[in-house]
Every structure is written in C-alpha cells, then in structure tokens.
Image 1 (tube, rainbow, N blue to C red):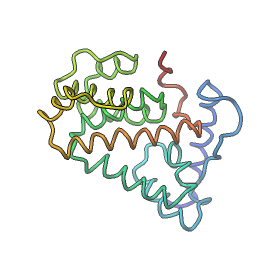
Image 2 (cartoon, rainbow, N blue to C red):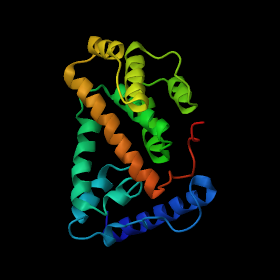
Image 3 (cartoon, rainbow, N blue to C red):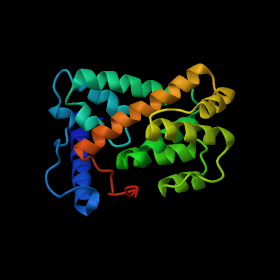
Image 4 (tube, helix red, strand yellow):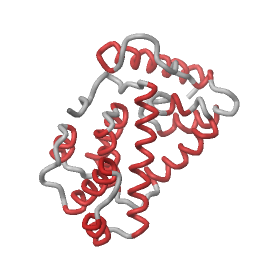
Length: 212
C-alpha cells in the first residue's frame, strides 16, 4: 500500500474518530492528541508506526496515537503487547476475557471495541461477555473463566488475591500462566489509562457505559 493511500485512510479514520467524539464519547472539541498519520511520524517513530499498521484494527488511532508521542516507550510497550496477545501462555479465550475485564472496569471504549469480537472468536460465550458488559458477575462461566474473573477482579478492585482464589488458580494454571495473566491485566490497565487520559474514542462512538 502506498504512503499516499495510507495517509488518506488515516485521515478518514481521524475524521471518523472525531465524529465519535461528537456523539457523546468525549467532550466536543479537538482531540487531546491530534491524530497522527504515517507521514507525520518522526524518523524514530516511523518504523513503529509501520509495524502498528500491519496488525491494528484502528490504524494509528486508539492507544497507538499517544504511544507514538514517546517512540522508545511506545516500541517497548508494543513488544510487550505483542507477547501478551500472540505468545502468552494463557489460552486465547481466557486472555481475551482478562482484557475485557479491564476494558469493563476502566470503561475503555477502544479496548472493548477491539477485543470483544476477538474474545467471541476465541470461544468466550456471548452471554458471558454481555453480563460483563452490564457490570454483572457473568453467569454460566466455565470453571477456568470463573477463576480468571475472580482472580482479575480481586487483584483489580481489592489490590490483592485471596489465598482461596490463588489456590483455585494454581489448580488450573502453571506458575507462568498465572504470571502472564497478571501481566496482561496490568498492561491493559496501562493501555486503558492512555486511552482514557487521551480521550481516544472507539470508531462509531460509545460501546459500553460507565459502571455505576
């Protein structure tokens, strides 16, 4: 794909995201971080931008827009996300579920928009995702999903994991899987922070409402 075509597509995406702001995703007005295109990237940031474009469902938008402001940090975070998405020891269904839990807790529109279809494709039941979206403890979770939910929720809301929940996790997962589960949860908190502070919207506007 030529640089000109990529620039046009990025501009179209920027317009779509700005439109989402006007439909309630964030206060009207300029984006806190104006949307970058490949042509606008510095020499240091350009290689990262090109890699992002190969895998991103939101182009250079979403968390990548603020990440590209700090190219070295952005590159390190991108590598970590690559591991946690594609090379983690946590099964894909459970990994995507863990990401959705953070998306729900943080009302992270882009995280939910990007990972909800991936979770369903990986085998998470639509009813489980729907309960999570509604702010309820999902009914009808599989045993391993229930452990992931309780582990991630305790760690995120109580800032600790009970002995009982840790023991349940130990029965199903290896030490590496538990560590990877913690890492994906914490990393997607960082991603949610970037998205929320930057007020980056999901394409099409709001997809989840704040928890009450």
